Image 1 (cartoon, one colour):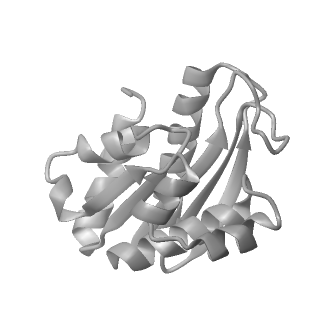
Image 2 (image 1 turned 90 degrees about the vertical axis):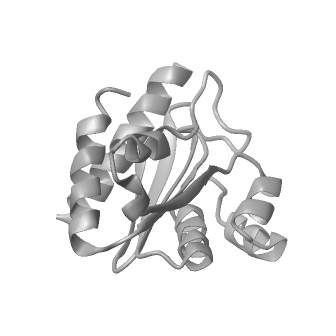
Length: 162
């Protein structure tokens, strides 16, 4: 967590200076990105909310993503950039925020039930720009992957804010 705090402080400062807001949807990071963003004093000026969205039921209830949209997106692959961008768009719409940061992944020790190896995460940033990328650590250690995915997501957010 300590390595995430300086990144979150820079993100918070940029968002506050611009009067912009963010909402976060996390899966395999387990809330680490939100925790880092919320650790910054004055986070209520920019952080609107977030959730650990770990199951299809959570996507339906917490992000209001319909089963039909999920089925359509999963036609490609659940752990994919198109699917995480869909999560980000739904989150942004739900919160009416400037930015949505969304993450899904397979932390380990096993891979996903869809054939993705442990150490794989897809992260999307949806706002004035819509971008996504895939992280592959090549590692099956659950905790280190959670940290790596959270760091990658926050660094990506910061890079796209600057």
